Length: 371
Image 1 (tube, rainbow, N blue to C red):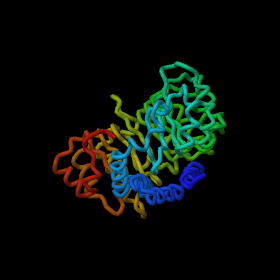
Image 2: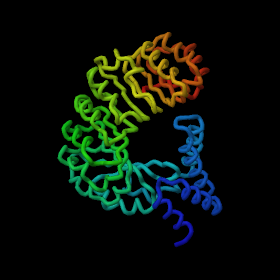
Image 3: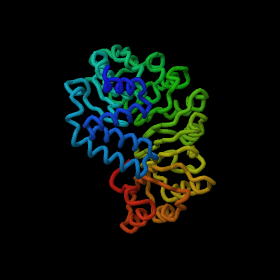
Image 4: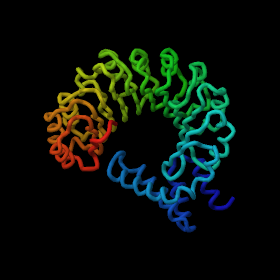
């Protein structure tokens, strides 16, 4: 085994470690491939920087420029049907979109050359069995499984929690595809998927009752990432759900609404309901919380002795008035330090935008699109 192969083998064997990747980057630079080595280093620097911050954005943008110039040289091993789409993390392909019907045949070759950690299977609606996909040995090396683009029947995923290949899975996306509430309740409250820390249930509006029953009983799980965009809750259900012990350390929480009827959060005190202690990202798109809700958020963030960890706040389409924008603009920079603030769809004036950009930085303010 030559030096290049030995370094790649170390990366594949330790996909979560940066040191083998940085050693490979040094070897590439010494071997005349400075672009690829620099790309790896830039993406690692972006990943190590504070999430959503200016350093992370700058390094990611630099890496993207290098990638656009050299991508055709780096990806021949992924073309020809092995993957339909892919993306890089920390210098290597970690996320792939694949055809579920032939994944079991192509996985060995893909996983032999890239430290793949996230898989999104797709297929023609209900054509072919998914059994081969879920029996693929390489799934044991996957940390994130995204089923949101996969047409499936409830029967085909009923044994997901019992699959030994998914014992180290940390993130599961079930969003947009119909699932049965009793099955989800059993999956979450049962012993399966013991490493699960991220759950995406977006667009599954019927799960409010199930989640308000299941999440308070998850003494054996700690969810750090939760996407509940467009899940319908009553006032009591959302309060029980967000008060769950398993969300005490949640870092990313998406509660986007956008449905015609008012949401349960509209009339609740956000400072009391939201589990704030570790939140880095909070999406309240379309919740209609208005200026009063902004006031509750700022009060919660500033009452703490230590600076709040929140860096990403989605307030698009929330009916925020001048009082709400003034509250954000006048907030204490030492306590409210946002790297991204989405206020699109709130009839923001030019002067208000200028003041927000002066307060949080021009790159932080998004007025163009919902989160």
